[in-house]
Length: 141
Image (tube, rainbow, N blue to C red; front, side):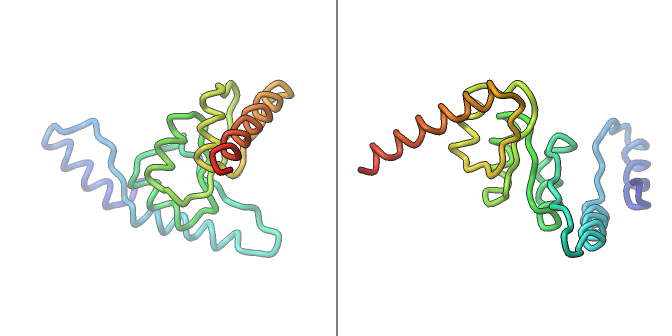
C-alpha cells in the first residue's frame, strides 16, 4: 500500500536522485496489521504467522510482531536473523530442503513448529532431536 507519506518521501528521494530505495510507512503497517488482527479476533480464529520471507528487515519485523502470533521462517539464515531481532517470538520453520544444520539450529533456538516435508525429513529430525536430548542429558547429569 502506498500511503501519502510514502509517496511524498519517494518523490523527495527521486528529486534527490536517491532511488531506488525501500520506503516504509511503519505506522500505516502497524495500523493495517492491527486491523487484520481485529478482524480475526473471534472464537476459533486462525493463528497469524508473518512470513519473514516477505520482508525480513528488522523494523518491519518489530512493527508486525505485536499483531501476529509468530513468525514463519524458511531457511537457517532467516531463522537466526529473526531470533536475533525478536528473541521471544514464536517461530515456525517451513520450506523444503532443510539441511541437518538448519534442523539442528531450529532445535537449538527453540522453534515451536517445524513443517516436515517428507517421511525422510521426519526421520532426520527425530534422529537430531534424540541426539540433542542425549547431549543435554549428559551435560546436566
